[in-house]
Length: 195
Image 1 (cartoon, one colour):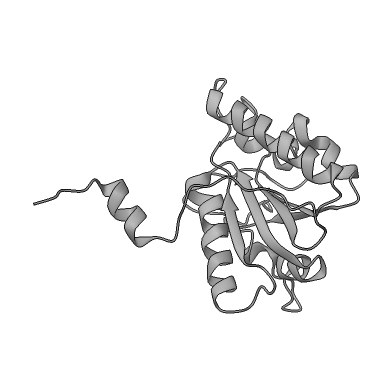
Image 2: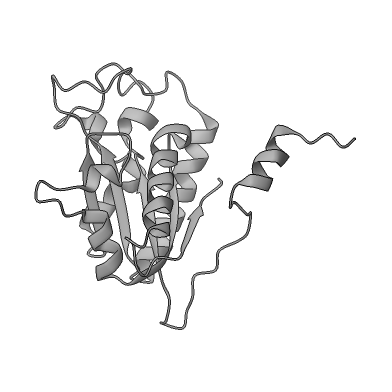
């Protein structure tokens, strides 16, 4: 009898592969970068209820890698979408304490990424829920993320961010489902940065 680890069983069942993504140079396929919640309230020591209480190497490396990818995408004038966790006072996001309140430094980009505010190819979306896909739904029913994919004819996205077990995971799962149901044309590939 062969016994497999839990990780191997999951790999057998999920459409996940580890591979390097090469950004096409031919002008045909368009790649986009999606950054999820790389904000003070989750990344900067002491910046809020859900911020780290001491320096964290994993967060520091994720910020460096995200900044490097963002600079590469912006240099190539490729589309970048940035989700910022931003909550209104009195509107809880249970089971979590109040965090990343609108208008506070908690809900802003970390210092290493503040330059993205001025980049013409960057779309910034403040969201008040875990999932950036759902947080992109407007009052009129349109979806800022879906429109961003269509407007830029994006065929592949790279997703990076903090809270990979909550916000990044929820966004990737919703995006996979929307793509599989044909709501995100021409999107084909979703890559998750592993650093």
